Length: 179
Image 1 (cartoon, rainbow, N blue to C red):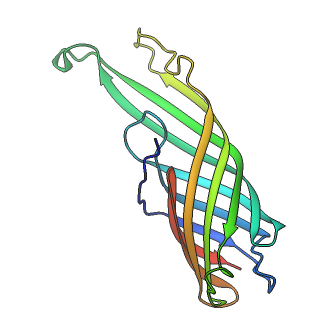
Image 2 (cartoon, rainbow, N blue to C red):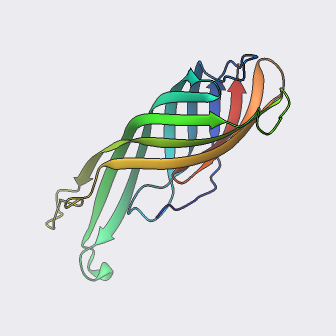
């Protein structure tokens, strides 16, 4: 089940749009909020991808993201002071496929509308404080598969600058596009 989350972030994007309706040669670097598996709350995320044209109106973009968080827990009764910290860093890596609906929607030159999917795997590193004596294998057979769906739009303020919103089932960003 995908958990949709509207998150605020800042993303910087360098994008080149040509007259054939293609949107490739784009470097996207972003900061936003995201959700990962069993964590149960949103986390700050750093994301980067490089988008290139594959077909008319369709691009592929290898990506890498970085999430990190820390939680504190108690053994038994919290008043006994038996507290430990759990740290996790997750690095999703994969490819994002994007289809642009600009021509279909007859959007003007100032707009891009897209639907995308990201597929990859998540590398996870987990750490506990030394005084933790419980099970340190939190994944217990969990799949490292990373899957995310996106819907987004960009408004081109001029040839060099745009603003965009990317909503997804994992990481959502709002930001600038520098062409």
